Image (cartoon, rainbow, N blue to C red; front, side, top):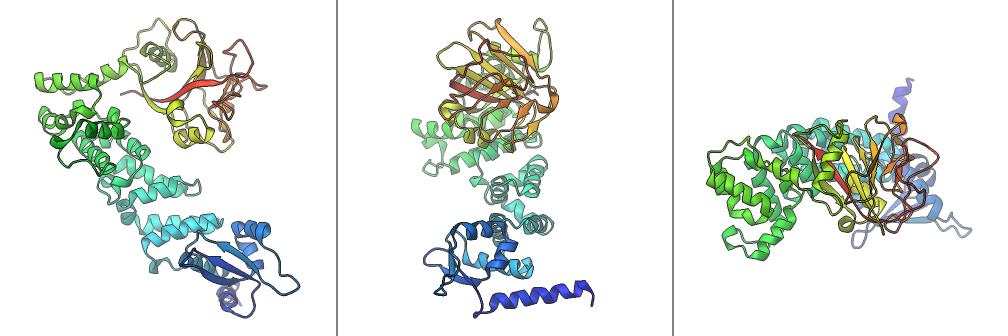
Length: 470
């Protein structure tokens, strides 16, 4: 008999064993009141098929004792109906997805990942992309949140990235658009295709911001000062990415002006002057660039620092003129977001072209570094020839600096899950209390030293910016 013909027979036999109510050596309690359900199973099969259940069994299950009591485990966070599907797959290798609701497939995927069923994880992602693409587009936030909560869902992550780049309007119109995270929103509106219709971006950002604050009046004419401040706080990290000068004067007056109080004062005054008092001024005369280039949202550095760092990035001489400095967009601030490595990786992983700025505690010293590639947390090396670290001995003296470019290209940065940013052998943020075990040297010399001392230091404040240039 052909081996391929034996597999269905084996699969059916195993499913019959699963359904046998007489011979089993473990019971599994799934769900929480009032949905608890008891399943009968066999430890040898669960041990072989699921790394997660193997760990649970080895850590918590007492083997059958002399009195014949069965082993018993509890899985309170698993839905009984989803566990039943997974259990039948573990035994028989069978899973018919066509009869399940689309949202149930996501639940099966999440549970399969928890149980360590890698082949099923791959299969489910492929099935969704090939058969449920329209549904995923309509439920983009669910797919985005699911895919980026776990590194196992790389196919779904690629689907989200491609959609954000090529079809942003479908995300704006998805049924769960108002539920997307701020980080997702910012990533979405940065894409070039999103910016092709600036008024649409503005209207959708407003819609999203108002949805986060359902207590706000429907008409901005009825907003109080506190209402405007509430909406301003919600949208403060999104507004810098809106290219207002792509709007017509009519669009600005009708759509933006009623919400003028949520726009930063300096930018607001420039916009009003340009659109209302000089309505014939060409859109391409972009004052936003002028504003952002002459100020930086930082508690540590000034605009002059950003110009100097921009020259370093472009490998210009200090005496060279730079007509278009990079824009520094703040994505993390220690005093606002926290000083833990977990927070750093949550915010900055998968972000590229970032500038690290550090204020050393009890000193006027500034340290920093530039990483053109993404940050990760998989304890591996990152390769780039363009990274560098730097220091200013006195933050008020921009001319007194040390710049060190990477020398070990293959290990320019290190993705340490237990640390903050790591520029290998040059600048390492470490420690549980304001990065109190940070230092600037180790045995691997990928950078020249930027500090006179090898002592540990604590971080009083630190900021990470993402740089952009039109």
